[in-house]
Length: 86
Image (cartoon, rainbow, N blue to C red):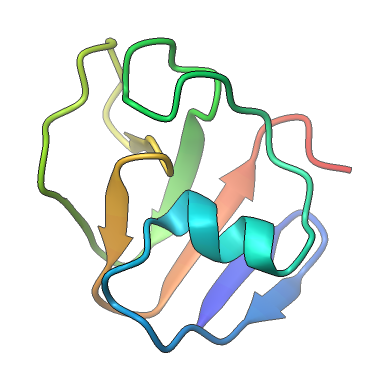
């Protein structure tokens, strides 16, 4: 399960091969993004709980506790805070 703050939206995911960005988009939830490749950092999101993994390391700088949904894969239940979420 993915919980999105501040809205509290809960998302079930079934395909471990989809990026977090793809999963969020499939539920028609707004998330800022541009490059989908870890360069720009526009999709930068705060990881509040849980674990994600990367097949490719992000090229943009991210702070501890931040993730890039365009590159990461969900491997446990997570809770995230979307910056500027609607």
